[in-house]
Structure formats: structure tokens, C-alpha cells
Image (cartoon, rainbow over the protein chains, first blue to last red):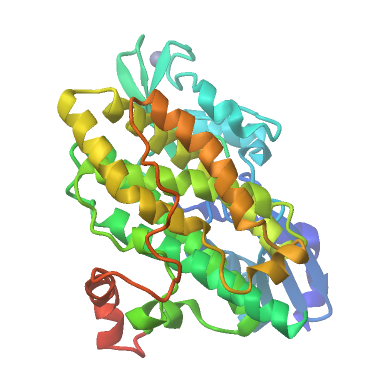
Length: 165
Length: 251
Ligand SMILES: [Zn+2]
């Protein structure tokens, strides 16, 4: 089987090319959605977790992950994707590089909360344009489940935040 | 798992899933009709979240019994649905929709918090996931109830009226299923009476601060999830219509 030529590192590498369909500037790896990669004799198993439980991008991501892994000459029937809910995905898992990319994309990165999600009640969202904190929440729901809408009083423009979860 | 426990847990998961799927459907009916664009977006998000939560509970059910979520949602008739009547009710006005959402969200929050301690690990894990999302719901619906309750004379009147109508329906959330005791004894589920007490501890002072008067009664509108209102059948007809036209369709 060709799988013997594959290493975990190579799998992680191709997974890093799969983008989050709703935020096409960051990969599923950078988002912390890939929890494990395991290889055995004839199978690659990728364990992933959804952002929000109702995330409509989950199926698309699974399909794209399979396609990406199959590019390593692994036939589709030998690729398994496990979706797990535990531990629950947290925005704290988004890498520093990805936070910078989110900001460049115009999305205020989620504040680190260390599990204390009550942070959402403090509405901490620096403006991705001017870095200012003179902002206020307009809607805790946005165009996708993972975004909230804020307004920057200095730039006098609205912006989106990646919601802390 | 003991077959008696499995049977009881299956019934519980189905009840939770059915409540969420129907609330998701009602919320989704606001799409394109909400009073302002931002709320249109918010309600669509809430609907999508509740749909996600329903799929989590149907997923746990699937692990236990092998039953398929799509089959359960789209091919069961009203008589086989196990939801509470509150989620069947038509949306009414904005105050009614948000009051229902608030009463439901707080109860769900209490239930999820308790379920995180469940000895049935898949349920505890799922509860931990769903609870994070639910925080946003509670924040949104409670902000609206405060705004409406303390707003104009008209918004106050409509919100009070919604509360009066919904209160006995909301109490059905805490009617234990027939075999709940076995699950409580095995630390799989929280006790419904305790949940109700915790829920009252939150909603009573909150509604009072929002200028609203809570009805005196603690008698639920119905004590069985087999009893439905006249609104369920037409809701299902709409929700299931497309799936039933071509049951074998691949999407
Ligand atoms: Zn700014």
C-alpha cells in the first residue's frame, strides 16, 4: 500500500492547505479544528471538531479534507474523518498567525478567554482597522454563526468580530 | 447499557431534539420578516444554532439506536413527535417570539449546565459544546425582554400578554418523562423539579426587573408530550413537504 510512504507530517501539511470555507484566509489547521492525525497500515484517520455545532461548512470541510489527503496517493476509501465534540472547540485554539490573518481580512480576532466565556459580556473587540477600543456591539449575530457585528466610533464604520467561543 | 436505561435515555434525547428542531423551524419563519435587518440576521442565526443543537441530540440518539435524524425529522407524523407544545405555537408578534425564546433559552442553559455533569459521557461532552453557544442566545433574548418590558406602553403590554400566554406552556419544559427517575438515579440526567427551581430562581427576578408580572400558576399546560396543539400538524406539513415529495432524493 502506498500509505507506507506517507508520514503524519505530510498529512498535516496538506491539511494546512484546506481553508475554512467561511473564512478563506485561514486553514482548518490554523483554526484548531484538526485534533489528531493517525496512520496505520492502510488507513489515515483525521479527527476534527466543528466550530459551532450548527456550522453548515462542516460537510464541505470534510469533503475538502478527504480530497486534500487523497492527493498524497491515498485512495478515498482509506481515509476516515472522525468528528468529535469533546473537548469543545475554543477560539483560544486559533493560532497567532491565523489571528493576524483574520485581522487583515477585516475580522477582529476573538479575545483569549481561557475557558471563562463570560468574557462575551464585556464586548471586547478592537477595531481591525485602527486597533482602537472605542467600539460597541451592534449585533451578537452576523452573516455567519461565528461572527458578531461591531461599530468603530473612531473610524465611523462597522466591522465584524470572530466571536469568542 | 441496561436496556431500561437505554430506553429512558432514548426518550429523553428524542424529546430534547424535537423541542429544538421545532423551535428552529419557528425561528426560521422570521427570515425576511423580522422588524429590522439585524434582527432578521439574529433570528436566522438562532434558528441555525437550534438546528445544530437538534442534530447533536439526534446524533446521540443515532449512536444508541441507529435511527436516522432525517428519517425522524421528516417522516414522523405529529402523533409521533415528543416536543412540548410551546415550540409548536405560531410566532405571534415580536414580543411573543422573544419571550418564548427567553423562557426556553434559560431552561436550556440550566439543563446543559447540569448535563455537563452527566455520567453518560457522550451527553456530558455534547452539553459542554452546546452550552457555549447557548450563552449568546440567553444574552440576546434577555436583552430584548428587558428592552420590550421597559420600553413603550405598547411594547410592555404586548410583552406582558406574551408572558401570560406562554407561562403555562413554559412550565411543560419541567414535566418529567415517565421514566426519568431511573436516569436521575443513575446520574445521567438532572431532576426536573430541581431544574425548574433553578429556572424560577433566574427568570422570576429577571422578569420582575423587566417590569413584568409573572402569573401565579405553576401548573403546566400539558403533562404528556403526546398531547399536541392544533398547530403541530400544519407546521410539520410545511417542514416535511419537500423531503416527502421525493423520499429517496440525494442532496
Ligand atoms: Zn476603527
